[in-house]
View 1 (tube, rainbow, N blue to C red):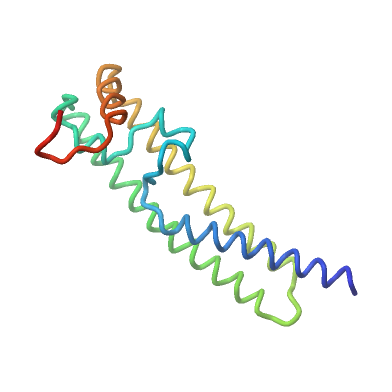
View 2: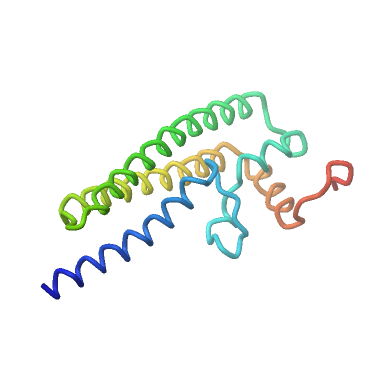
Length: 159
């Protein structure tokens, strides 16, 4: 009986952590903006917003613009679907967890759904970042790297 209570407490603790992570993931945009010191990949990728803000300065071609527009629209649509899916899974887990005696298998199955959706969201983000980078020329990437290092500038004070 003590083992069952301990297992229940562990599951509740894990669920609390997952809810926190899942909620944070659900609140993110398709391409999260995090400070480079928190994201080890930030130095290697270019957020869509950065590319769009500097499209003239880096000389984006019409073909590159059309590609980026299409990719961003596709990813945004899928991300929205995943947010709904994540919310449904979280509600399902909460429903299982509210019982006085939790069916561990059901709870873990719901947890797996949440984790799979979160994995797909991360996969979507990284995939978009890769496609954006691969569509840019080395010169465009170099210019964007310089702009990232200089930080944000007001529109009337662009370098």
